[in-house]
Length: 410
Image 1: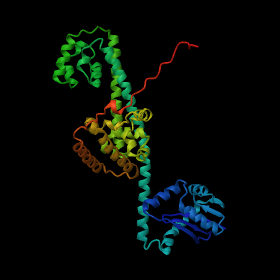
Image 2: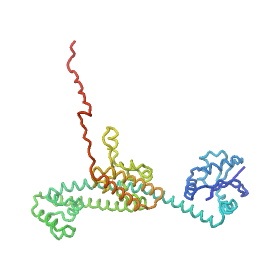
Image 3: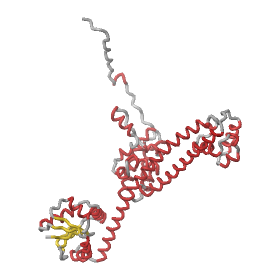
Image 4: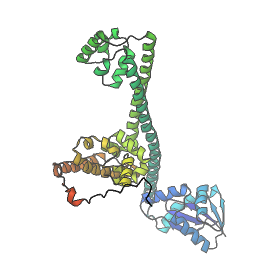
């Protein structure tokens, strides 16, 4: 015998060739759960209701099953259906009778209810698909934050080289300008010592005290003379460094915008850069959302953790979350507690970002602040160290006998 199997928002339905309904397996649960099941079938994954209706059809001697698409065929094959399987897209027209079938079967009472259920499930399916699409964007965040780290390493090396090279010509500037980006801008825009005048320096936005120091130092510099060709080469190197700073700035803006879309709660708690680093270290937002808070707390401190496990040293209290301003500006004895509280909130934030996408960052931030204030209040004073009397508590280490290097006497 043959049956035509279709899927609707109410479940799975089988019809004979005359269009007579012969079996149904309805979905149960909230619209979110039904939407998940429908999306699984669209992706060719088997679900419990499909297995149940196939059992019913097998018991009714149905050995020839017609389905409307390949994804339902893939899910049916995964359940090892013993009969023959064929695809006929025309049977999708049977969906037009589902409304009447739902009314007759009592699944709905009115057509308004039908449209209301359909709308709710369709919206939920759209939300799930959007979330999945956004979750893939976390891989772009991962790549962008890694690119920022690589640019930082490269630009630091280039600036170090420029400072060493240009320092031969104007060594005093190294003690006056500490900001690397400003340093390379000065090299790019001025270069020659005799061109360090107040007009040019004002155009770069420098403060009056810095302008005075640079002017005086340039006039009395003890640096060596370099050929124009050398200074032009240093200038080109500085231009490259500036371009890298600009690229880094663009990437930081990109990460900021992407974090607002993909992980607004994580961004709200620790900012876009630390949040992106956590996602990168975890390998994606999904992996971060499934991590326990204790793992999030030490993400980025893997070397110290494994050293502690191997040699029995003190385990790390924090990883990359140490960059969070409240953690690294707090007294040493409070950092572990604050890191634990922060990791707990980050774990919740990651789960909300991945599974829901709702922005509740303000609420999470408020709770975190209350927790940190409590920690600072209860652990205001440093803990009293226990003085161990080594002579009494620790056993003496016996000295190993030295090996006899000479020949044994017979």
